[in-house]
Image (cartoon, rainbow, N blue to C red; front, top):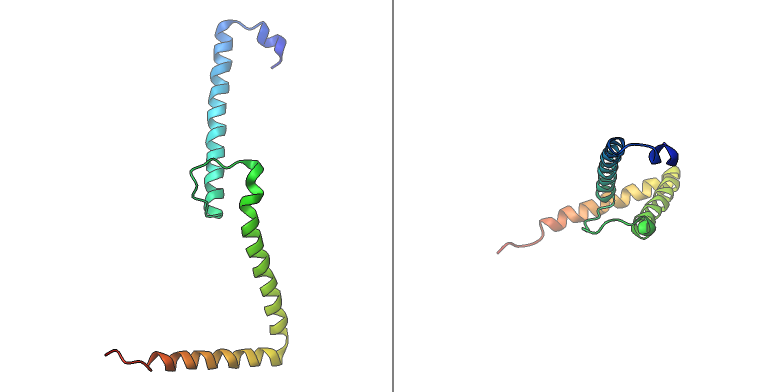
Length: 111
């Protein structure tokens, strides 16, 4: 639809176009709201304020930093697990810690 077509349309046709555009706008607003709700859930955002696209980096950066830290730790874990001796030592340490925790659990008096 171009400007000339709209300029030559009668009032009834313009009313119909406005109705269709209004319905499309409502549908788009609903879709945006659905996407925003999903985004809020994924990033644990509870603010009642509307999310501004220009400020998305501020919202995502803390999560991205945590994910990068987790990824770095996973890379360290993979390297350690690739080393058989280091893995055995790590497992022994875990067993010792568990044993100490189990023993400490029964080492206190309730009365």
